[in-house]
Length: 375
Image (cartoon, rainbow, N blue to C red):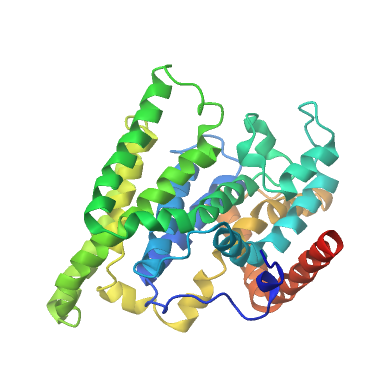
C-alpha cells in the first residue's frame, strides 16, 4: 500500500454528502453530556446506569450514520480502504487522546497487572485497552479511551460491513440475526453459560461492534421507507405530527430507562434504542429545523472533544479546588453544570483553533515514522 496517499492534504474521496441528520446529532450531543455527568460527579447514590445506556445509543447511532452516508456508495472492500477510513477518523481525535493519556501517565498512579507503567502507557497509545481481559486496565491514565479503541475497531471493519447493506431484504434478515446473537450472548452470560465476554462486557469491542452493525443494518429499510414518505416533507401538518413523534420518542426512551433499568438486560435496551434512532433519522419535524442553524451545529460539533477532555479537566478543577482549599458545598447539578461549561469551552476552542494544527503535526509524525521504516 502506498502510505503517502494516506497523508496527502487532499481528502479521501467521499460519496456525495447527504443532508446532515440534525436530530440524531442532538441525540448524540445529549448522550455525550449524560456520559460526562456520569463520570465527573461523585455520586452518593448512583442513579440508573446512564453511562452504559448512552454508550449503546452512541454506537448504534454511529453505525446508523455510517450506513446513512455510504448507502449505495460503498467503500472498496480492501485492507487499504479500511486503513484509510480508520486514519481519516484517527487523525482528528488521536492528538487530543495522546495529550490526555500523557497527562494521566504523569499525574495518576498506574496499576501494574504485571506490566510496567510504560507498557500500560503503550497499551493506551495503541488503543488496545478494550481488548484486555483486565477490565481495570481501562481506568489507567485515560480511562475513557476504551471507547475509542472499540470505535476504531468498528471503523476498521466498516468497508466489510457496508457489503451487508447492498440489498434491503438481506440487511433486514441480518438485522434480526445479529439482534438474536446480541441477546443470546448476554442471556448466556447472565445465566453463567458463557464467560468469553463477561470479563468487561461494557467495554468489549465485539459487543460494541454488534451494536454498531445493528445501526448500520437499519439504513436500507430507512431509505426504503423514506422514499415513500418524502412527498410529505414540506406538509405543515406532517411536520407538526412528526415534531410530536420526536418529542414522544425521547420521553418514552427516557421513561423506559427509568422504569425498566433493573428489569431489562442491556440487549433489550439496544433494541429499544435501535427503534429510537431509526425513527429519529427522519428529520421532518420543526425541532430538526430549530437545531439546523449554524450556532447549534457548532455547539454540537465538539462532542468528541468534550468526551476526550472530561477526565483531565475534572481532575484539574478538583486539584485546583483542593489546592485553594475551596471546599464550597455545591448542589450536585450546579457543580456538574460548572464543570460542563468549562469542558465545553475548552473543547470548543480546541476544535475551532487547534484541532487541525495538531492533526497536521500527527500527519507529519506518521510520515516520518513511515519514512524511517520503509525508506
